[in-house]
Length: 93
Image (cartoon, rainbow, N blue to C red):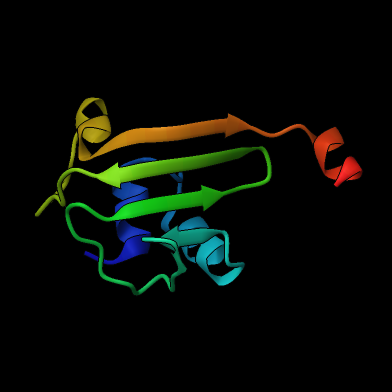
């Protein structure tokens, strides 16, 4: 499954276009490497999302074959790390 579609179906990002844009801005990594929206995601892959207000690191547990209910979306991945970002932190770096 394409990376942008997985991010949307898993509800890590709200829209597929937003997921594609995040990839274009190099905010998404797969197994430590910057990835395009068309990158194929498979079980066991590690995804890193470095967004403006949060950093997420997740492991892909399963790749769905079809639609996924909202209540079941969290079963597609396991959360490895989550850090909230504060805009003041970036000022001191």
